[in-house]
Length: 268
Ligand SMILES: Nc1ncnc2c1ncn2[C@@H]1O[C@H](COP(=O)(O)OP(=O)(O)OP(=O)(O)O)[C@@H](O)[C@H]1O
Image (cartoon, rainbow, N blue to C red; front, side, top):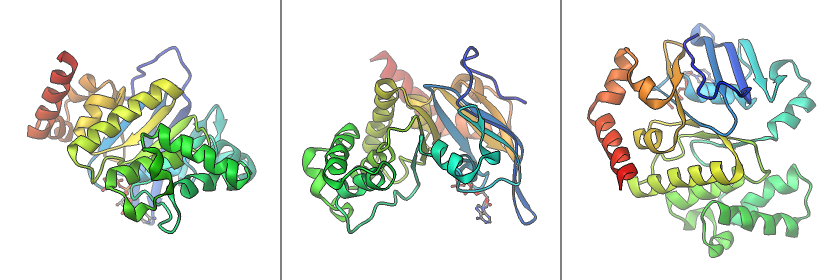
């Protein structure tokens, strides 16, 4: 296994071992190992179709892997009864690629839904808690009464994040959260993630193509290639790995400019 632990004294919150995912004859993952440690933001990158979303869906329980083991908070996820699984899965917050808010509901109603359905809160309490979550995600108070169609892409992402945070998750899963945002909106979202990690002690599993996000927000980066995690480590070590995809990705023009921008921000 090429994965290297960045925080060697802590037990991982999630450990994926020898994972296999196949669709018919198409093998997406084979012998895949990966861990997520408490309080870290782990960026998951890889070429298109390498199975980043499939990996996320396997961990959050939306897809049953063909083989392997997924330990979550010390429990073997795949051998649990459905009720036990759902108890564990409620400790996750998930933000999918396309946001998935209900367009007929206001933002407060959207965020209140999981609080009513899963936590059993009465509607008024759920909606006032939802307003707090929307504020936590950086939205102004008036956004609570608006519907998704009235909002910019950046505000919708924040609302979807607020919904993912509704049940006070310990681990947040984000599938390309900055896709479709302009660079300023994307940078603001990255800063928000860092704030949430620090303020709430969240651990974050973040699928991304965004090099700026890797440089500014991620504590470690995992690269998916050839059906497994090729390397998972601090960014500078990952970028130094001798592999053609990694070289092209991190040392091409976009990789260079992301690195320079991150250094300039740190120095200013
Ligand atoms: N339900 C499914 N049935 C069949 N094939 C699937 C299914 N879900 C995913 N796949 C296949 O698994 C492979 C990995 O898909 P996945 O969406 O995880 O890739 P990805 O790395 O997230 O890609 P991208 O960066 O383009 O979003 C793809 O070839 C995809 O077609």
